[in-house]
Image (cartoon, rainbow, N blue to C red; front, side, top):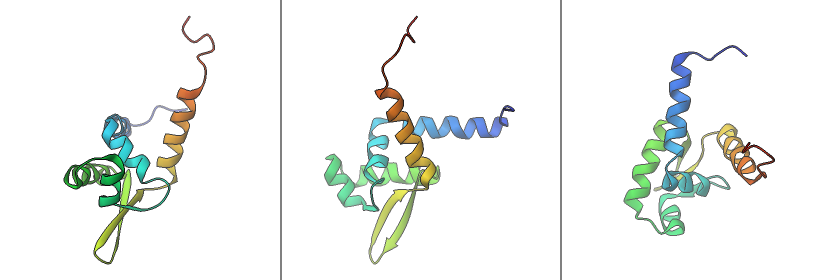
Length: 103
């Protein structure tokens, strides 16, 4: 595999940086199963709606989540299957036993 361009490396690093914050990761996970409103995310995670909205703005800018307006409410979901697949793969990875990797 050829090395990716520097710009792509920076973008992936930024993506992992955003997902490296536990609060943002929990917010993204809350949006995976179905589109979810800010108030429902906030209530489910015991956070303020303003804090959730702030994090969602960052996640939207990075194309990690997408927003869809339905009437007066905005519902958030994973931007695409790549996001849910990435997170699923990472959780599978950490669930694996070390199998001699600490040598």
